[in-house]
Amino acid sequence: MMDLDTLNDYLSGLAILVPAAPVAQAGYVTKEPLPALAPPYGVAEFEEAGSFLLRSQALHVDLHQRWRAAEDEQERSRLEVQLLGAAAADLLIAERLVASLPGLFAVTERVRGPSLASDAPLIHQAIAQPESLLTYAAPARWRGAERAQLLETAHQSLEAIRTQATKACQDAVTEAMAMDFAILVQAVDLLGIEIAAKLRAAALNTAALAVEYVLTASDKIHAVLGTEGERVLKDEALRYLDELRNGDLAGHAMERFLQTEVIYEEGKAWIGGFGGDITALSGTSDRVAALQGSFAGRDKVARTVLKGLAIVKLLPPMQAPPWGPLTVAASYLAVLAYILYSAYDHVDSDRYPFFDRVKGVRGILKTELNPPEPPPAPTVPTVPPSS
Image 1 (cartoon, rainbow, N blue to C red):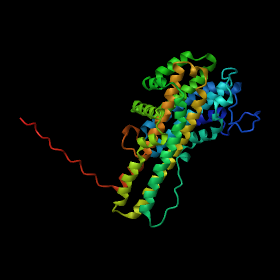
Image 2 (cartoon, rainbow, N blue to C red):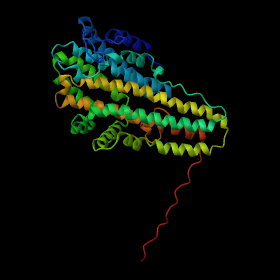
Image 3 (cartoon, one colour):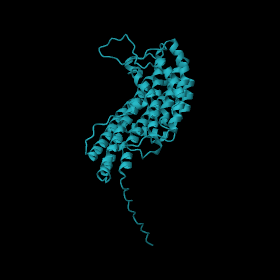
Image 4 (tube, helix red, strand yellow):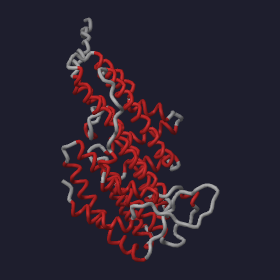
């Protein structure tokens, strides 16, 4: 169970620093509407941000401990969305702190890009009601056509997850590809704690609190990867970036990683050969369809985190080499890796046991249809060398 005291204490402070309704800064007259801009904090809010940092860190510790201990798939999913939502909240607070420091963040709105302020309702939803982002309304079922329905549902789910993952990764890829690739390579090797210590030492006093919120967000981003396979995850993200850098198409690179077409053909054979109670396949279709919502919720909040990183990376300490760019690069790689592996987990789930959050499309079909194991490959007899 969630520590409600920790969560409620956090939410009470969040309501002050990140109002649930989106906030916009007035005074702009343009032919085209600009994204909502986060207004600067007043004196009282600035002081609240100073004390709220401890609550954000306490929530991170609580969520991460519970996430690691969770044995239930639904509980892990809820906690994961809450961690991502809290990371986005940290980045929005950092954005508004920066806006409160005259002259420190003097860039135009065109350069800054869209603010996180318009995502405040989503951030609150992710933290307070994460389960609402993980649901999916399955289409009406055709009565008496369970086998065809399951095949169609599997196809739709695989296609939807691949498409969503490709679009979400593109947000991270666009930002990461603008960075020096050598920085991205270096960010895979360095420990987050070393980068954080160096960045703190380099930060200006006036920007120190904003930098602390960026680092706290970074901790939450890395937490959703898990520690067991973080190096493998980041290596795969870097390989994906390198493929795109060398001209590969995003859709081709994603399919090569997810292998949804292979999974579909395998599942098609299992469904066609199923000899059990055909009416039992209705529940299987519902479970497969639910994976679309499970991934879409994570995808939605992860993309909000990417949006926040695109803003705070312009904070002067985040631009000062090497530690600022390394912090940003490590965070981008972590979010990209998270999206890639979360997508794979939702379509399969067998290949990487250290990233097993849900039972994916292939996993559900294999469990429910119980196909026969393929025969072992024939062994080729060894011919002894002639004397």
